[in-house]
Length: 262
Ligand code: BT5
Figure (cartoon, rainbow, N blue to C red):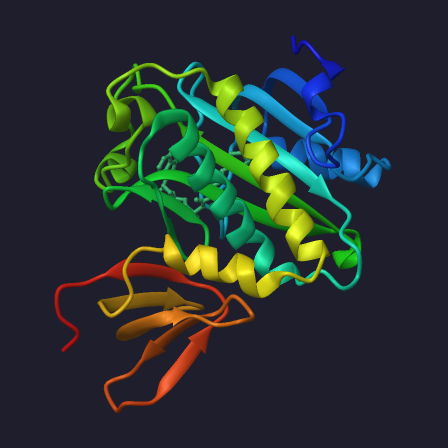
């Protein structure tokens, strides 16, 4: 059975995100549970975490491997003011995760558009943003690999060589402390979006993104587009230069760095 309790963290009294955190033992998906609570009227800034997810999800019906005592799995409910540029929220979340990882673990983490956080080119964290209430609300889900996996990973995930924080920093970490730090950083990033400071936020995202100027292949909507990564535009789209020298901007997709483009 799940243990369900909400608490108010005194340190967090002045911020709007993560003031209240619901902690569950187990859940299908923290995103799914928070979406359900959103439709029951849960407030902006509510966070929900679970020790394990039985149906943790990634984008496009993919799964997020969520065994107990390994990862940090949590979601945040946003009810953003109308002027907030929703397309920048996943990048703001990536920035928050990368910064929090730097602060708590001293590890250099990089954003990989649109929703990954990598260490040494390997996936440490994934972000899944899902809209609710006709776009009036959004759930931001964050999964971070914290401790070494006790059981072998499923083959398809192992083949991608994800990394844990413990492996990256060669020491143990408290997932709760990491979550507090991410919530604080995300609160700061979201406040900047709400204050119209998108340009400064985007500059910080670009500064810690995986390198631009390299050959990439982007799978998006069943199409594979190859080119040279140019950067992220002001709407949060990934810009690449195609073989013919023209540029194109993608709204969504899976980026892979490749050795050569032809
Ligand atoms: C993501 O999707 O990276 C978004 C993951 C979001 C997970 C959080 S956990 C809390 C919240 N509640 C949820 O139900 N979800 C969110 P995507 O880019 O589609 O990546 C998914 C792919 O990453 C899978 O198909 C696997 O190949 C790989 N993968 C699965 N689990 C992984 C893990 N723990 N670490 C690294 N890679 C993983």
